[in-house]
Amino acid sequence: MVLKALGEPTRLRILKLLMKEVDAGLCVCEVVDALQENQYNISRHLQFLAKAGLVVANKRGRWNYYRLKENFDPYRSGLLQSIGSIPPEVFNGDLKRLRQRIAQRVDGECVVGCGNKQCCTGK
Image (tube, rainbow, N blue to C red; front, side, top):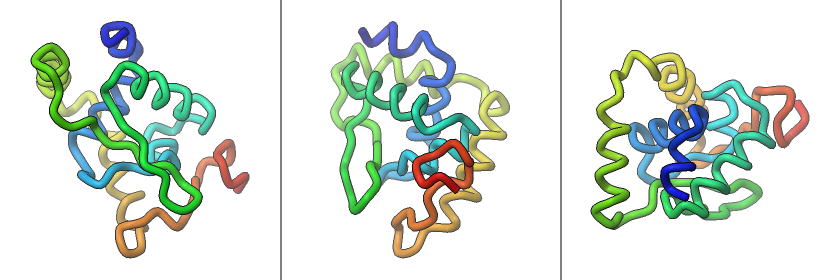
């Protein structure tokens, strides 16, 4: 299941964001805005990554925050190191949008919801 999880470009993009940015995790809304995808698809991909044992979810308030699972076995650890070696320019747009989005946090928490009209808040 892990290789299937890594075989989808959107899931690779999500993992790269989680590897680069916030130790406490990313709100689904933040991932939606960073990747410019709809909330349903991002949630589905995050759930798949969780089933593959790559990410864990933590519900805080009305939002779920996802982060990389800690203490990977050597197999998963090696696969994530491979993802880390993908040239950064492939993900520059995603990372730039994520940094702008994280800057809107209040006390380390997402309070904005999605800027994407197809997201969870319906804005």
